[in-house]
Each structure stands twice: as structure tokens, then as C-alpha cells.
Length: 270
Image: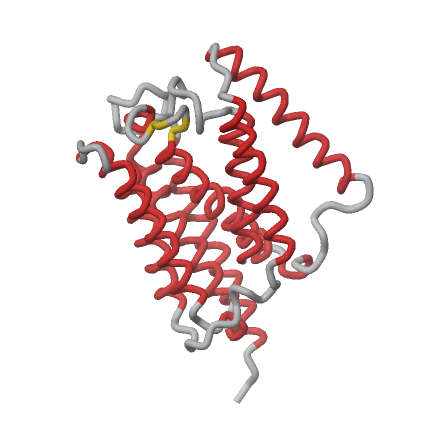
């Protein structure tokens, strides 16, 4: 999981920092108060930290966990083989260049070169670090595993906590050092939950534990989806989001049922 989180963070920088440039643009439509709160030297720092963590966990690590749980027989197989291993990175690079030109033109905004190059260097550094990290880094804790519900609760509370820190506090705090305080609080939440989770011996884990982590991280998004459709103050079209939330719940429950059945079949008879 450690390498996946680092690669997810690199992806977050690649998408938000280098393709759509939301780390820098004060005109990005999703910023809200974060287009002003925490903006310094041409960078939306609070937004950048929050989106990097979001993509690391929700955009990359959680989907990978779910796919590996859904297809356990192919877990050890590479996802890209042969020519696809070369073609997909080229397509990604082309997508980043195309998106950079498109969104820059639409917003009439181009990020400052030094800050942009810094983000590129960070993405490369995170990718290199992910390649060097020991495969079992996140699985060799000493504390015994607890029940799956515990890990669901930890992940859900951490996700709700990040939402509170990055989206509620910026609307409440108004003093010069407030953005730095928010960033430190967010980093502390992320660091704390990673430390807590990796302190357990995941070599003794079951698929139900990994599903619980993924479901916990998605819980705030699912809850939000159920109510977005009824928020008439939103400028975007949220039609169907309640159905998306319900479908997500159904999908996770079906996956849990399948995992429970497979574990029951593998359990030795006494």
C-alpha cells in the first residue's frame, strides 16, 4: 500500500498540478474559498495538499484495492502487458499536454514556470521513491489485527476529518497563519491514520480487512452523494447523484458478500 499511496500522490500532482493547473489557477471553478485561503506565491497551497492526499487515497489506492478484491485470481498479474505497457504512458503524457493547453486557454491562465517545474520534480521524486520502497513496508506492523469494522471506522473518521479540516475550517478561520494551521492539521490527520493502520500486522489480514479500509475511505463521498441532489444552492447539475450513492453501497455490499462466501469456503472444517 505504501508504494501505491506514493504513486497516487504523484498522480494527483500530475493531474491537478500539471494538466489542469488547479494548484496554481485562481480561476479553477472547484476552488471555492480555497482560491483565496492559502494562496501564496501563485500556489493554492491548501487545495494542493488536500487534492494530493485525495488522489493518493481515493483516486488510486482505493480503486486498486477494490479491483484486486473483485479479481483475486489476477492480483499478481500486471495490468498492462506488451505494447500496452508502452502505449498507456504515452497516452497519459499526451493527455497531460492536451489538458494543459486546453484548460490554460479556457481560463486564460498559465502557471508560473518555477512553481510548475517544482511540481513536476515532486511527481518524479514520488515515483522514484515508490519504486524504492519495500513491498511489505505497510504490512509489517507488530500490533495484532482487529475486526474489519475497526478499520472501516478508522478510515471513515479520517476521511470525515480531512473534509472538516480542508473544507470547513477555511470558512471559519480568518487570521494570517490560518492556512498553515489547516495544512498542518490535514497532514497530521493523514500521517496519523497511516501510522495507525500500518502499526498492525497486515500479513495476517483477510480480504474483509482491505474491503473495510476501502469502504471507510469512500463513506463520506457516498453520504455526500446521497444528499447532493437535494442541494439547490449548488451551481452544478447533481441529478442522479443519489442513485450513484445507492449503487456504490450496493456494489460494496455485493463485494462483501462474495468475500465472505469465499472465506467461508476456504475455512477448514472442524
